[in-house]
Length: 176
Image 1 (spheres, rainbow, N blue to C red):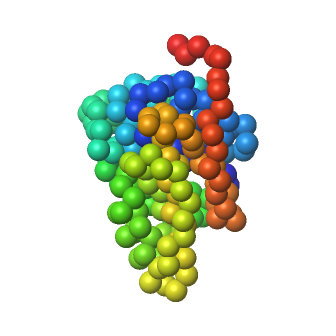
Image 2: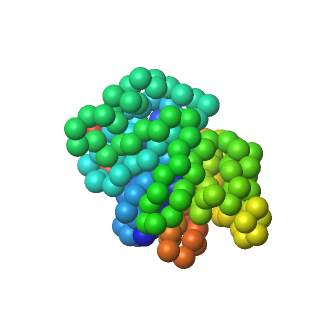
């Protein structure tokens, strides 16, 4: 199963949509958003793409009540978890958290096949030695919103636990 990993969209709807469209075109079947959506309405640009969007809030919590309302609407692709999330996709245990230092700590437990984070807008893929004697990949996709850094996202293959940081392609399409 392929996934799209984004973080720190900071209300940049065109870049968020362009990243998810590109990932979908590359075979992604789900989106993980590691926080700092800011305004929950930003996620509306993903509704018609049909991919489930697993999202947590970051330090820019925006309107948490509205995020819950959007996620609870019938037919919504958004699944909102709060400050962090432990989910299972493609037979893999995945932990989402906003802060990189928490991500590294969670990776060391060996309880997760993948840990994803954001916050510092620095795209990176690392492997953290864990207590089980193996390594856990930690993926920070950077800032999909292009805030203080190039707009990037990550695509991953959960079967192979292989990940790649990609630039967000430019999009000429206007958003509704």
